[in-house]
Length: 232
Length: 364
Image (cartoon, rainbow over all chains, first blue to last red; front, side):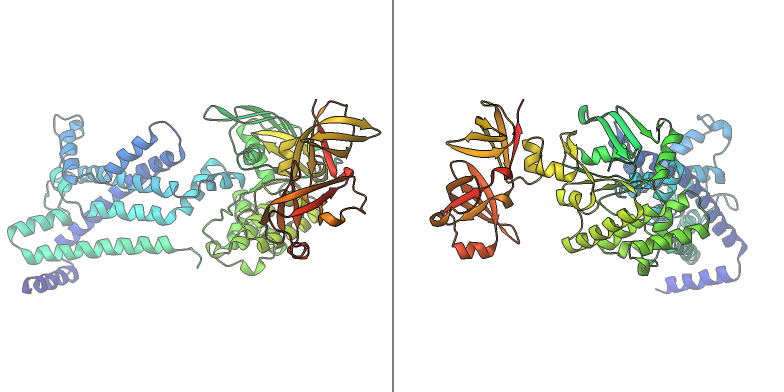
C-alpha cells in the first residue's frame, strides 16, 4: 500500500512543481490523441453518416466490418502502420516512422472505426420517418444532416469520448510506431510502461494518475457539451 | 366545393417497391381550399399516395404540377416542400423545447428571429399549447405532441397541408378534442389539405372530398356523403360501413322500383336496372328494424322477413346483431332494446327495412 501512497504523493509533486518533463509528456499525449481523435471524427463521422443514410447491397457486410474494426487490437494496428512506414515500405518515403505524426496516424486508424460504428448506430437509431419530416420542413440535404446530427448529439458525443478514450489509453501502437523517444515521441502510456519496467513504481503511478485526470477532464468537458441546451 | 382552381395535379403516378407496383394513380387533382381525405384499409396505398404528393417518395414515373409549374428538378422540389407542410402519424418532434420545435421550419427557411417569434406564438395559441412553450418536447403527452407537430406545420404558412393519419395514435377523447379544433382551424384558415385515414368518420368530420383506395388505386372519389350513401362497389360498401352487402338477380323492374331475388327470397329496392341483371345490394345496419315476430306490421317498410339471430356482438355503445333470414343480414341495437325485446342468440325476430334504404350497385 505504501507504494501507492508514495506514488500519489509523487504525482502531486510532479504536477505542482510543474516538472518540465512530465508536462511535456502530458501535453504531447493530449496533442497526439486529440489530433488522432479529430482525424477519426472527420473520417469516421462522415463515413458513418453516409453509411447510415445510404441504401445499397452489401451495407450490412460493410457495417459488420466497421463494427469488427471497433475492437481492432492496437498492436496489430501498430504492426501494420510500422510495416507501411518502414524505410522500404509503401509509405516509407514519408520518413514518418518514430515521429509524433506516426502515432497520430496509428491512433487515427484505431479510433476511426469506433467513431464510424457508433455514428452508424446513432443515426440509424433515429425514427425512420424523421428524415422525411426534416425534408418536409423544407430542409436542404446539408440542413437535414445537421439536424439529424443534432438529434443524435448524445450518442455522437459518446462516439467522440469512446474514440478519444480508446487512443489516449492505447500503448501498443504508440510504442511500436513512435519508439518512446524521450522528449519527442514519449507519451503518458509509453512512459508508464517504461518506468514500470525500470521498477520506478512511484513515477509510473504518478504518470498513471495524470493519465486518469486527463481522461476525466476531457470527458467531463465533452459531457458538459453533450448535456448543454437539452431542455429539462 | 370545386370553386377553387387546381393547386396540385398528379398524373400517371407509378410507385414500385421491390418490383411490385404499389401505387397506380392516373390522375389526382387538388383544388385550392379543398380538404381531401384518402381512406382505405392498411396497405391500400393511402400513405404512399400522400407521401408521393408531398414529394417525399421516389416514384418510377409520373408528373406533379404545382400551381401550373412542374416539380421536376431539385430546386423545384425544395421550393414545393417550402410551400407545403407535412404532419406524420408520429409527432416526430426534435429533442428541444416546444417553442424551438414550432420555430424549426421557419429557422430552416432563414426567417429573422423577430418574425419567427410572432408566428410561433400565434400558432402555439392556435393549437392551445402556449403554456407548453418552454417544455421539453419529449415530455409531452401524445395529444400535446401532435398539437406541437401541427403548430410546427402551420407556422410555415403552408399552401397545402399534408396529414398522414394524424389521429390514429391518439386515445378517443384526445382525438375528439383535436378533431374539433382542427375542423375549426381548417374553416378559419381555408387551407388546402390532403389527409389520410383508415377511419371514414374522420373524413366525414373534416373533409369535403374523399378518395377510397384499394391496392394502390383510387377506387372511388367524391363527397363523403356520396361515397357513404352510394358506394361504387362491394369493397367501398363494406369499407364505409354498409353492414349488409348481398348479390342477386333482378326479377322485376317497374317505375324505378326493382325486385331482386336473393337466395330464396325477394328484396324490393329503388333504382333502375334491367330484368336478369346481376346487382349488389347494400344496407346500412341503422336502417334495419327489428321487432318481435308477433307484431311486425304497421310500418311503411316494403321489405319484411323473419329470421333467427345467429350472433350478438358487443361493440361498446351498442350491439351488432347478425341474422339469418335466408340471407345474411346485420344490424345494430342498443343494450336497452336487447333487454326490452329479450333478444338472445337463437331468438326469432321480424326484420324490416325500406326499399329506399337499399343501395343498389348494378354490374355492367
